[in-house]
Length: 85
Image (cartoon, rainbow, N blue to C red):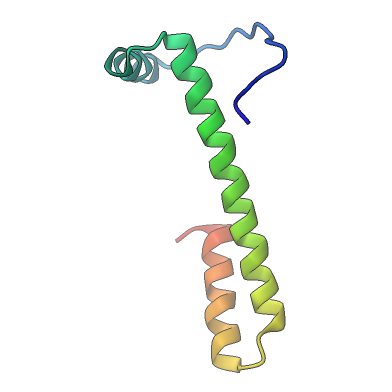
């Protein structure tokens, strides 16, 4: 999934602390800062997709729950996913 057919040049501004962390990670892994950013972004996108899928799975379990205790627990868990806490 990480194979890109076409690359697009994109300019971004990073806070100094984040840029330093990226450079440090890149140096540790012997990558360029650009490649490190690409990997971090790809990892973040995958994490968001997993989080979204977990939410949908939990919502489906909530809709299908017949036990009131289970429904309350699942509802509370959905609330934490949506609103934090």
